[in-house]
Length: 340
Image (cartoon, rainbow, N blue to C red; front, top):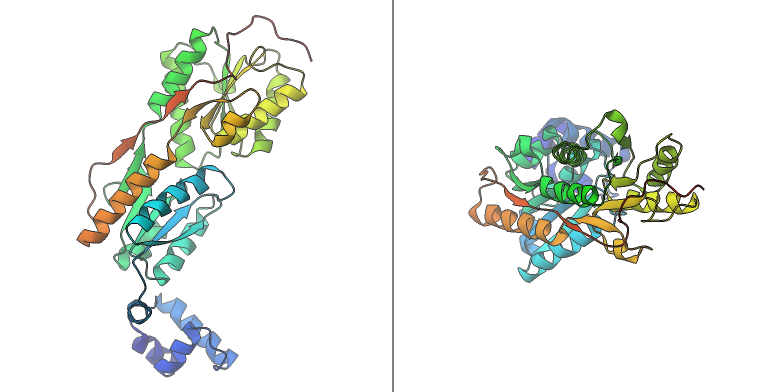
């Protein structure tokens, strides 16, 4: 599909199509709307290569993340951009806000900018959203998408080690009433973290029923609400592992508000090991997931695909292994809690 075909279908000149694509006000609105409809019907994406050559644009990568308000992702962006800058590559980043429906829009925007590759560092990935990149032969690297790694390059995270270390740590301190604060169930990263928690709990002999899992949304407030719910139980947990540090902070806040001491009355473990984990009082024990390693592996794979012009050449995924960082929010379990 090229601009001549769009012009022919719309019954206008190529100059008119070009003006519409460039947002010119020299085209009547009715005509512009008609041209935009034809562009959408034909799934036309402008080729900006010639323009890029004229303006001397450097190579360009796209980076898609889930949530720029979550401190995990700005760190990942920073590391990725640092690696790209060292190679003279510019980076455009955008985010989905954990909404899989937005992914296709993010991919389209990047393809329209004629990027040389896209790192999709999100959990919410639907294969149809990637179709445009495949059609235009734009290399793509995904994050932890096992079901797609026969078709796309993938940065894999092996959650088992981190959760096993966390569970061994808690059980060695005498904890058996341990709850996992999970996240949105449609996210593949949450599914894997939850499965890793259950496997570790089973291996350590502390796996119970469904009441051992409580739902959150990966934000601080949901951690507070979840902990308030847990404290109303007849037997509140002696330890909570949260699927990310933000929810762990909310758990800590709710425990403090209820008059409980951390870690004397309840132990708390987060996930991600964000810088804020060390700033909490007490400092938060957390399962460390290296943003630097993820960014380095994603960038390395994208560079290989770009240099070899082989967007569809999967290989065995390399794994990033989270590990437990012990700080002040975990301690030996007590048989009795301090009453609020």
